[in-house]
Image (cartoon, rainbow, N blue to C red; front, side, top):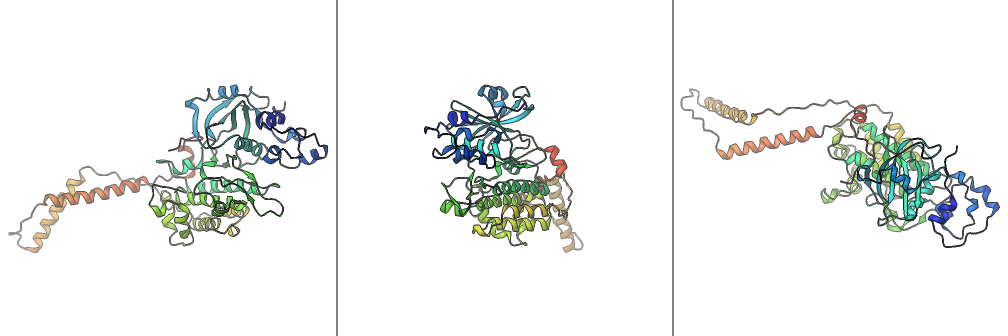
Length: 455
């Protein structure tokens, strides 16, 4: 049996709550609807020639869930199933049985519940349904269904075992992502953006950032959260004008200044995430010195200087990356972050460049070495210091009779202990930074949560 498809009459009347009378059916429109993607404006514009009868349910393949069913799947949205929270609302892990809907396999899911007091609302929820209900690609997260019941708005996605890139890349005390894994993630995200930009009706993602890149068990990247996505310019239009929306540190400068949105705005945002993958730093970090708080401003001038590139590469990689690959990736990030939008490459070009980087094999293989600090080393060092003083004294007085070895005074001993302590701390710090594993070992050691609560 075919899965229960969603009723456009239900969605249009019950969720959109349009106060305008619906136009009469127009038969001449229906034949073109099946070949083009529907947009948000097709439904929300009361003057549109489209009617409810034109909105064929065959375009979509989404399940309509009741609130009761999703509460059962998530144990009543319990805290034990809580995965995290974003601008849309809280996210919960759930499990859907194959008996719930004909044709729906039993699987783990992620359920996002709209926060009525949050920064996003019904329009963002509807945009998510319309875009992900029609756009299907290996590097876009799969939207399984939705719930629109009274004031409740919920979305049901496939469960992504490794969570989002932000948590995986910046989480404290976690193993460092290997170089090839970082390239694989960047390539997957680039393919997702390229697919959106190359649609017959181009889509501008508008909110590309590390937290919106989800990863499955094999580190395949998929774009999520289409609440701010919008249709791009078509025909002779060079851009679309819109209210500036997005996330600090990721938005393109021309979009912030003018509100003019193009596909190149997404390319700039991708450059920021690529820079995060190279440096291991957040796009904006208020805990760093003032000149280093904005990652793009600090790192972009260094990207084109091969001699300074090592200064900004993620130290947790411990040099285990392709030198040529790092240089080419840095050059790519530099292009994507150009202040002139026309100088940025297309996402298709970005994909080709990243694919070539994965073929490079000049990655040095280092070994993990741990040095156990010796107990009582402090006392031994002081004894050796006194013996050294005695030897020096005997050299100065060949007979050694008049040699008096003065013990170290308290001030000098304190100074030696301080220096030894500093060396000890530096050694521990360097050992901590060596948490670099091969791709195979990484797959076995990392956790499997979809979202982690914000630190």
